[in-house]
Length: 213
Ligand SMILES: [Zn+2]
Ligand SMILES: [Zn+2]
Image (cartoon, rainbow, N blue to C red; front, side):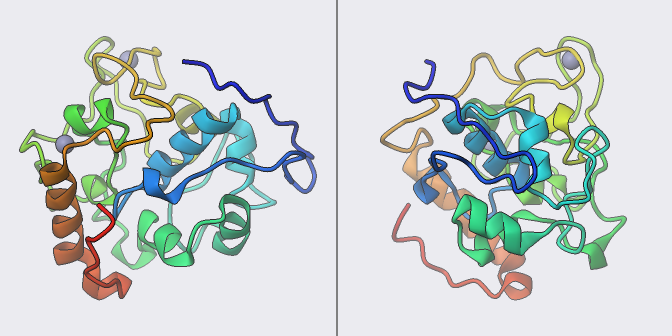
């Protein structure tokens, strides 16, 4: 379903949206990755990948991109534009201190991607399965067999829920763009939230609030 509101025009220098962005924090689960956040943002606002990559910092070349790391991305600027709490963005990015423990390719659960979710934990070498669906995390496209580098560039950010190499959807269909209710079942949302908090709460200083799931 196509968005019913107009495609926003961006001031290319300041990247200020002329009409205001639409985003609802309720679309996110704890530990939602920056890529997942940007895909939701891109679809809700009809924005191309290169415009979103520019939000990561003034000096970033969109087609080259930037590593999704806390020290590489301008979190303050991102927070102002996406109007998301700093801790949500902080949690969505990888910790530079953990360099080398992250998968260099985009890694996904096929069931989660069908429902529009990708967790920051899926990028970690220490994780092998989705905590909700128990599926093995995958990196390859089912059509072309290639992997997509986990770099915030126009190619990855501009290919929501699809292989950035060949355009094939990672799941059987695109997740709904503006679902009023969460697409994922409650027990699965809780499993993902709990897993994220158990794994990451210490390093992210997050509470254990699961009330809004
Ligand atoms: Zn899953
Ligand atoms: Zn492919």
